[in-house]
Amino acid sequence: MQIQPADRLNAVQEYYFSRKLKEVARLNAEGRDIISLAIGSPDMPPSPQTIVTLCEQARRADTHGYQPTVGIPELRTAMAGFYKRIYGVTLAPATEIQPLIGSKEGILHTTLALANVGDRVLVPNPGYPTYTSLTRLLGCEIVNYDLRPENGWQPDFAQLEAMDLTGVKMMWTNYPNMPTGADAQMATYERLVRFANDHNIVVVNDNPYSLIINRRPQSILQVDGAKEACIEFNSMSKSHNMPGWRVGMLATNAEWVRWILRVKSNIDSGTFRPLQLAAAEAYNNSDAWHEENNIRNYARRRAIAEEIMTALGCTFDKQQVGMFLWGRIPDHYTDCEQLTEQVLHHARVFITPGFIFGSNGSRYVRISLCAKDDKMREALSRILENKE
Image (cartoon, rainbow, N blue to C red):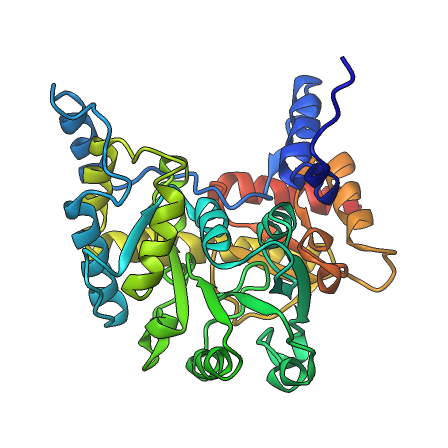
């Protein structure tokens, strides 16, 4: 048979971590014992009551059928309560929230609902690679906008206003920012809402990191009029230790929620009911649980990550938030991958090269805080020994 893949595959490569983890697995099979400080997958379990709820509900005989794509009322109500408690934002549970099977799904469904083939989409550089790959797969044109350290990794609105914005339908933003760790700024959110209204562009803000080493979580929906111009994603993967559960959400005005639901309801059949009920319970985690999990735990690891960055000769901004540390590599390296490959094959530590996030990340590396303290200290020891 002379079957060829769809042309759209020419627009993307296999996801970097999918490809690189196969290499790491091979090295581990050879006995190399690689310590991974690359991926932002929390290594701790959800709260005890979350797991108890899942188990109790899964034992019931009446919880195993198809579920509504819109999500069960208990989960939507819990999500609205979370936004009110954490951000002071009021959302109508039945109409202004859509549960998601993670943010990647949300990127796909939102783009399908809002952008036609050939429409242009503003994507940050550096930024989450999925903004770029899914936009290309769906036949839209990428228009990169720069995030730079001299501007605190915030959008340069003078540069944005000077760009040709003809045909731009959407703009992806992500604060607290990944990979740079730049915190959200209310002034940025206010400018983004004005920018959206002035240019008839939907701003989609991805907000999964606001509780990690951060005592002042913010949302773009705190800005007056944001719901009419913006969509915000949030996720339980990072802040609730639930990456494999695949529970996220988006919040916006009721009309855009209906559009996105029209896409989503033709693709999936809803999330397992016990999992939704457990996620709703997780939104009730105590302040003490969040303090220990999202502040103290990651702060300890962050201190070790800073030692690792220093050992590598990298410089970094101590004001970063979130579950990564972003650092600029020394000038004597040709590029960031030269450093990360050296660390992988000589020190047996896997860290992320910044080029995967865009050209503005080519002189940077990223360290994940999703490893136990002892593993991070072992990684530091290996790097220091390799230097000697």
